[in-house]
Length: 179
Picture 1: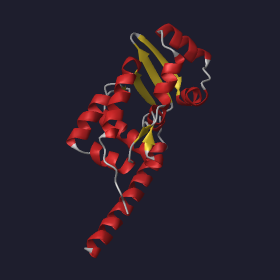
Picture 2: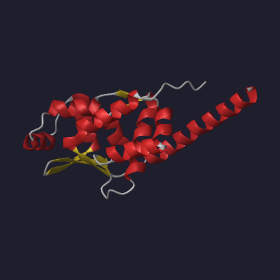
Picture 3: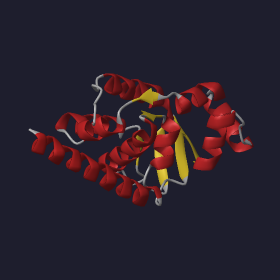
Picture 4: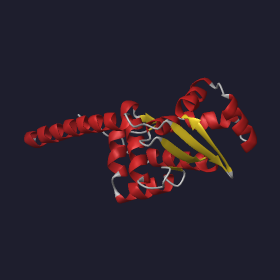
């Protein structure tokens, strides 16, 4: 039994290190801009501009004009971007690599996806896990910042629904004790 626990610990340490190295390599390719779509409107916003808005509430002129055209309240978007969801990063990674997790990724990828709609599942999985590993919580702005393509497309009208789905998924994750 002692040998089994030692091997399990070694496996977990190796896995954490591998994910850390993998995360670092993906972070180098993190998204630079978000293509935000509301109905027929579409605007490209830099991730730093969106991050500043999420952190401070300060809107750029272009984002303000776009939200006005879309009929969206800035505070609603800011709340959606910054709402934290508590989730264990390692458990999240495990679940997202199961058939059920892949179905969930496919659903969320209908709202947050690559420009070409290819490799959506893998890109989203990467962004979610990287976001969760640091502090065992995720926010939408972290997911967008950690998305591994230069541009990430977001269907703004469906953001609130997707955030609820991610929250429900995270509430279904049991806590995990590593050591």
